Length: 364
Length: 75
Image (tube, rainbow over all chains, first blue to last red; front, side, top):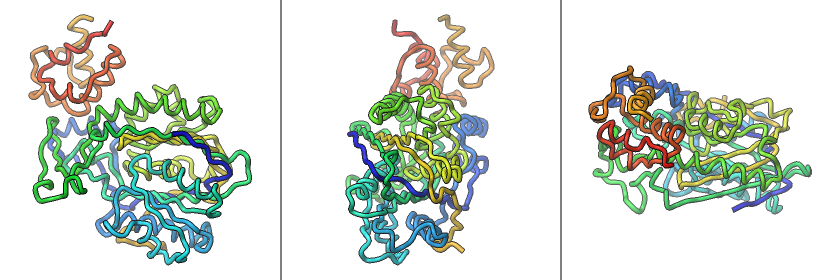
């Protein structure tokens, strides 16, 4: 599916990562592999440290902390926020949805539109499309798109295939109207549910409820441990999916937006791991300097939140005065693909903050 | 490509000393045969031999010979 939405812009991005840092070198002893082999994996994949929320901090806490920070800074106003769209793959509760929890934590107006989207790695772009459409349709002047992830990707701590690359984070983008002709967002989406088992958590939902049996870890062919309640990732299948599908998707998005590939000033991608992104940049013939690959080694892969973390960490305050033409792209569980071409910048704020832990929702 | 060259590619891929691998080497006994090596094998097969292979096929490998058998160009 392709769509263009005009007359909207992102006026600010703020992402938060938990203060609690876990170093890969300290986790090596927990994996059922020789240390030398794990060190080699860390060097190639880019595993160094990742941020994991403490047990008292939920995805909603991370998100509410960011929004309260924006209110305190004067960058967002409660009475101006007519909509709240929350994208996540983990919920504070099975009922109600995260957007209602955040609404209550923030004390927003009862007239605020609140909605929840369940999305994985492509969540920021999917959410951006839905949020932008609300503003462009004239339903509201401004909407907060929240992407939040906790629970470290459902990974088992003994699974060296998945745990080292996981991280928790949240991101908020404020989307508002724009009178500038330059402000248009061009989206391309692709899905292939027939390959969904390449990234799957088998148990814990309606298809296979969680039980004591599903919680028992088992050893796979490569020696990793995981239970049916944990993320199962076929690394080879995911790698091939990304290498085969993302370059044509980006090419298609550029053609749809009426631009040449080389006009893209930054490729702001979802962050699975450094190894995959280096290969992707080379395959797309894009300089590695404009396709950042450093989020996993600094913070971990926080699913839909990696794009705002990527933007805030790598570009940050530069986007207050610059407005480059960028291609956002994301790929992952589904298996799903998404891309968006837009001018991103001249923002009111663009920063990465740390969450102190303990379920805090009010910055000092 | 000669056998010795293919073995050299595999040894380099797994950061092993030259001469460490033989066709009959069992992958189960090889510490360096892990998920990273499997992914590196996929990349190498594509780059050097323009071939694709699935994770399922790789999981069926038992010896180095199984790896050597797929290290051929399709043409």
